[in-house]
Amino acid sequence: MASVDVRTRTGESKGSVELDDALFGIEPNQDVLHQVVTAQLAARRRGTHSTLTRAEVRGGGAKPWRQKGTGRARQGSTRSPHWAGGGVAMGPKPRDYSQKTPKKMIELALRSALSDRAAEGKVAVVDAWDFAAPKTREAKAAIDALGLTGKVLVVLEHDDVTAAKSFRNLPDVQPIRAAQLNAYDILRNDWVVFTRATLPSAGQAPAPAPAPASAPAPATTEAPAPAAEPAAQAPAAASEPAPPEEQA
Image (cartoon, rainbow, N blue to C red):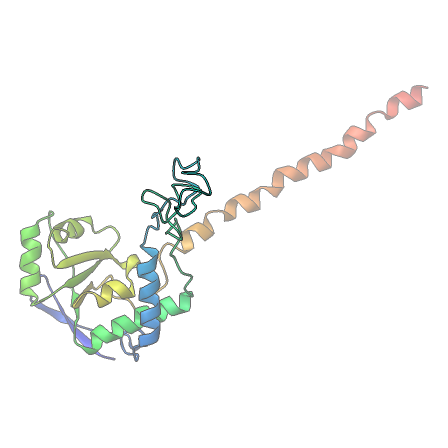
């Protein structure tokens, strides 16, 4: 495993950490990277473009001139595509550009992008972003102290709002949450900066996954209990009409 020095935001050394070979040490798959990045960029397209066909353009209901005898070409409507102000033939209409990409391809593309940056020595690890308050000046000083040049991708924890506000105004720094890390943002930046808490490993499980699974469990186990009580009382209700038969 390759190791990376862990430093504070002032540049002081705080030991080292090993990068997981399953994430940072594979051979990048260029074909998968290209396909996943293309799909990600396609999903960003809004697809709201729309042009009017000859049936949608207003006007043109009357024939411009009679069929024969004028010496001009026959015409049926002034809203035909070859007329100025007419409809558009085969023009763009609203559509969805998103592509279906298998999860394994997305994971492979992410590992390929991380491995590419690790092979270039462009992966940095910070002990923690201990900003007392959101300060762009302090964030700029931290980037300079760490010696990061070019475009920098800063991977933050979900609740690290102070650091996100500190970095967001720097033009060459892109803050991103660890759960939103993707291949495209890694490739478009020169450096990837993690903290000890956000540094991924192959054995990590997504944090939000267990919460929804455990919440509905008590409701399903307790629900059958009230349903059993009316069934037990049913025979008692059926046995009550017996005394009138004995009196008869």
